[in-house]
Amino acid sequence: MTKLDRHCYDKINNEWVIIKTYTLEYQKIPYNIATILECSRRLRQVLTPDLLTKKYRLENETNPMYGHCYHTTQAMYYLLDTDTLDPMRGRDWRGEDHWWLRDRENGFIVDMTADQYYSIDKEPPYDKGKVTSWYGWKQRPHKRTLDLITRLQVDSQITVHCPLQTV
Image 1 (cartoon, rainbow, N blue to C red):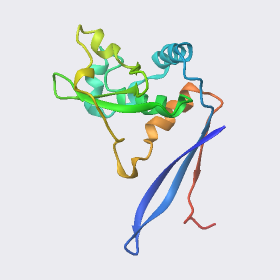
Image 2: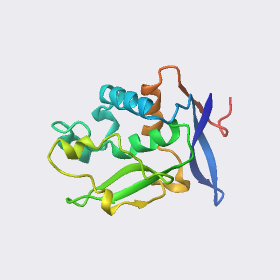
Image 3: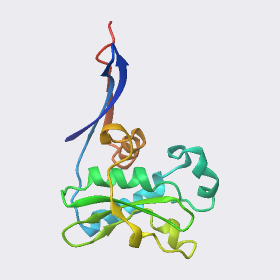
Image 4: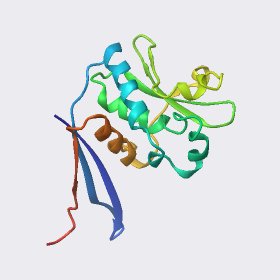
């Protein structure tokens, strides 16, 4: 099993201190076309509007992949058993950022939500993409990413540890 931590911080006595840690225990999956296709099939079953911020929910009603690119890309980054994938971000025609993975060795693109473009006769903004760091402080995985991985792998689990909590 692989462990992935998401720390939550608070400023205590003028220092940032970890106040909570979500630890996800999960299984890495082989980096090959068969497992990517299987993940794509499974994602269609588990990507739901509760994983979205409110601004994406209306369009998501008619375009089910819309708004899911960030947490889906981050989940695949952690799930796939390789160190050759870079997170990419490019701005589309409406000014929205789109995320996907690109293999730095062969240029292969892993974009689990590309259908949000193809389903409306548009192209993903791959030509505008740049290698990009994850959103957020300390590049930590998002909680939605952890939740999505647990939906994809029913034998994975998240535990919560609060080091400052007393009994």
